[in-house]
Length: 428
Image 1 (cartoon, rainbow, N blue to C red):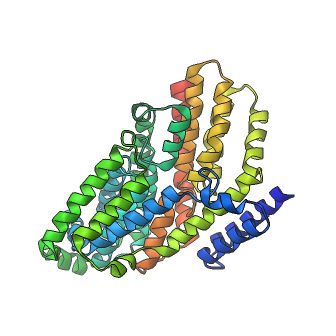
Image 2 (cartoon, rainbow, N blue to C red):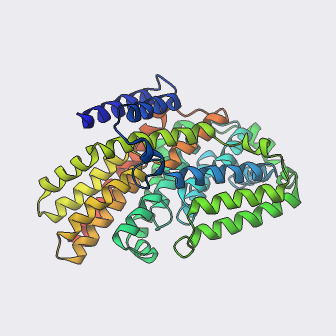
Image 3 (cartoon, rainbow, N blue to C red):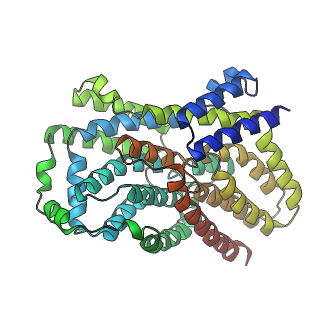
């Protein structure tokens, strides 16, 4: 009965989020509250469980990076980069989109994709405002590129960290097995954007000419602060890249970096905190609690067990189901808690296989499905939610379905290409 109740609450909440009939923050808070009040999740575990409650690592990583980005914004660097990008692309919309997507996709494997979006999205908004073109298509394309690019390495996407820890995979394992298909899928996606966003490629010679006449160096308002901020940001990024070596969670790195950034900036704390996307952070916390309700009542475990029973010993069918199943389910549940819950189930499947090659194929199928499923809907991955929050705050609101209609296509394309890759590499 508790499983039915938790599933009903989740589905009703997801309906209101998807249809935007109510504010999504209000929806997740009510749903999370109902989960706790009805005893579907232990109140203490909501706040303290590492695997089945609020993931504070994600929340505080976002908080730290929001503070860092807010301080860097005061230096005028985003205006500088926006003018530079507009001039390099000569104001050509498709060329600009490809440039921004490529920067995002290259950065995401080395930062996590949430951090990348938080750094690139403000630049995108500024450059689109300068060119008087809609920012929504560019932000959507960047998020999709970030989720694709982040799949390439162990540290690029949070589900990869979870999977690597459970499967004993290394950074180099991800480079060898994930990077090749990620590069192919990203190149294909770049070609498709020409068609997907064709209605958004507006070219206005007057606005382009005015931007081309700007001197980007004049956009920097505080050079000394910029130098200090870049040093701190560089150390933070280096610490992210050394995540597997340093005994520090990315959230701790981000928070320490935010504290140091506030010290060197000597800025007013209340002014900095106004730059934080508080509704986005609250939405994350509520969403984690909702998913935790499904975990504690056994909904996800039941689904996983049923899948294991149906698949039997057909390894290729198992890999296919993991790939497409993770892609579909990952589109509706944030892929961080989804990967946390499913990893033990995949480990059980791998334990039943005598061939290490087959075991590897199952892990990579799961990773590819979980990563690419993050593009499926507007709430499927942390980067998606963050980007929509930034878009709303800057006056470029992106609706759930505006994002999702592109996300579904890109997810389907990615999963089909990944399925062919798994078959050719591990089963042919």
